[in-house]
Image (cartoon, rainbow, N blue to C red):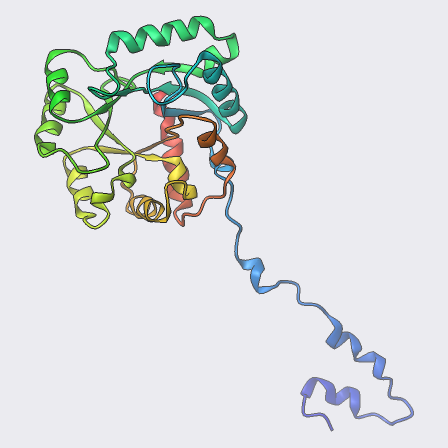
Amino acid sequence: MSDIPILRPLLDVGAESFNPTFIIPLFSQRPRYSMFSFFKPKPLLKELLPTHYIDIHSHILPGIDDGAKTLEHTAALLSRLQLIGFSKCIATPHTLPEIWENTAEGIMHTFQQTQTDLDKTHRHMLHHAASEYMINEAFLIRLLSEPLLTLKDNYVLIEMSYLNPPLALREIIFEIQLKGYQPLLAHPERYLFYHQDTKMYETLKKMDVQFQLNLLSSVGYYGPEVAKVADFLLKENMIDFVGSDVHHMRHAAAFDHKMILKSERQLRTAMEKNVFFG
């Protein structure tokens, strides 16, 4: 007799009437799902972009910083970004004394000249020009003496040195706000000096500093530690907007890589918020 209950009715028959092929299907059925089918594959970064995605951080104006070098480079980048799924781009060249001595007038002149020289399709994609301001003592002088270029309304894109934050960080943020601007900190996940002091992110948020995540952080482009902090900031709902920070074709190519973060839902939400800058 079988010790398996389901087989007893099949085996408790006379030898002359027993047909062993009758029970073969019980053992030959393949499981419908494997253990691996429960793990959803990570999407490519470009697959996460919402319709009509507006990029608010790029270095695509020609010959003005460490981004696109020529008009041809600008056009090629815009073509690639359009294929990826970008709708419009805001150019944000660096303003960094002694390295990239850009001025508001110089940036807008380059933007307008580039708009004139581009064809109609590329001209439509190049939506607006602002700047990515390095905040330091020299920035304070500029802030107090001339208007800043903004992404929209009073939103100004700022960055810090990757080596250390400015000593007068709180004072600079206060002065920015006192002038009526909304500070938007570029790529907070890339400042290594905050990786062991994540409470500082909370401090900045309490000071009403908004955060712009670099999209390439989500595919590990800047290394696993930066990706880990990007995931943390998304999980804690600290990210307000996103940007490509695209400088060249290698950055554009990274949109074909798979996202490695866990916080996919929060990343999608941050991407969708960029519609504000349309």
